Length: 109
Length: 114
Image (cartoon, rainbow over the protein chains, first blue to last red):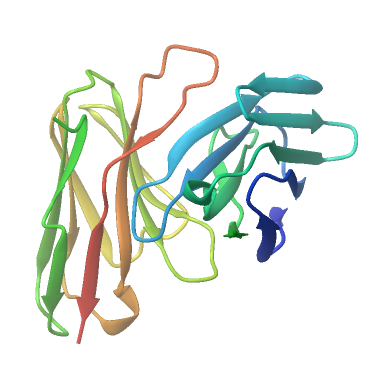
């Protein structure tokens, strides 16, 4: 079967750096997405990786290793507003998105 | 104005009732999707449509039906609601043309079936 694994919850301190990991086993690979979702709200797009390496976008960066079935989202200079769930999703060989259950990130002052 | 809108935002209904959730978009995207989200689980695809004449079942289509009335409108129906359909429902759209084909989500409908 297809599987996306992420930690259920993480805690970090305001101003610090946090890395959220995602491992996947899917039938085929056509890209990996990270979304942010505040409680009760819609997921919003953060990043897309299809080739190995690091994609940087402001305070957020996303890394992909296709050979290891692994990605991470790196958040720098954490702010209280970054408290949210972070969803990892992989597009499989049928071009469907397979979603992880999300990582709830708690930021403490 | 929001690019993807969903109505209603909240709905409480009873077992056995028929209910329709509506989604409209002004993004001009061809592709539209319906997902449900349950606590502790990833988003699950119910149905998707790549254009007005194209409707496809997702991984959990049983108990649901859809209608693509126009490029901008995609409705989800529960013919006879049951309590385990209580969930947060999201509509999403994507352009279908670019490499990423990123999906953009509506604000969600919280449905409770008693």
